[in-house]
Amino acid sequence: MTVRAAAFDLGDTLVEYEGVPLSWEDHYPEALGLLANYLGRPLTPTQIDHASSALRRHNTRVHPREKEITFAVVLRDLQNSLELPGNLDLAGCARAFFDIFRQRLRRFPDAVPTLAALRQQGKRIGICTDVPYGMPSELVREDVAAAGLGDTFDELVTSVEAGFRKPSPVGLRRLAEKLECSPHEMFYVGNERKDVEAAKAFGCAAILLDRAAHRHAWGQDRTIASLKELGGIL
Image (cartoon, rainbow, N blue to C red; front, top):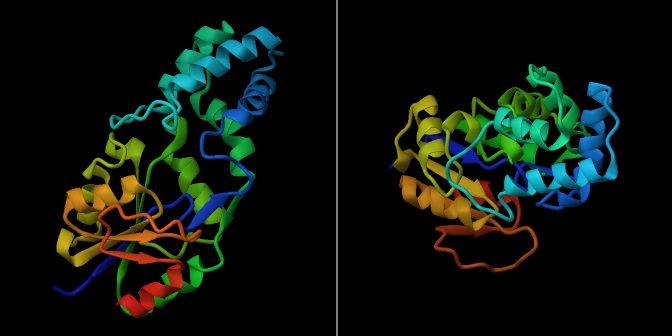
């Protein structure tokens, strides 16, 4: 069947958080400090420790989960840990908390040329991405635009919108509906095992992006070292 749509993971596939480890734990104090500054409430070392413990409970690199949560859930736990008042501005708190990570977002050099080439071939392009700590989807869309990818894709679905994280295929199913294609008309490119498993569970082709040549064998249909190799596959 003809490939009508190309779908991509976001983090470490099209973009990277430069210098930020996958678990983000080392940056908890900094992120909590930005949140505290936004709220005008200085934090004690003990409060930071308690809040960091709360964040670790939602850290999917430490505690994997398939059902997604929202940032409202994370903020509620932080409120309890930091003894913050109720009725907080959710959007403002999210912008403050995630700011340290968003500043480090960079796109990979092969992203724009590849997506542009796929568009020239008439492919619909989508992004399906898990988000950390229930990060609001509007911030993800802002970051994608700020990274210079805003005009390169047609649809984006986050794990918060889907309600599930990969390897659940729910996000890919919703993305395919938006792209108006069947599983067999789409391929999905990602850099992790869960990306491959989500694609296979959904029924579309799974392409593993292996920039560091780890040579993982997770059941993917193809392995590429650069996004530019997609042109040769098609």
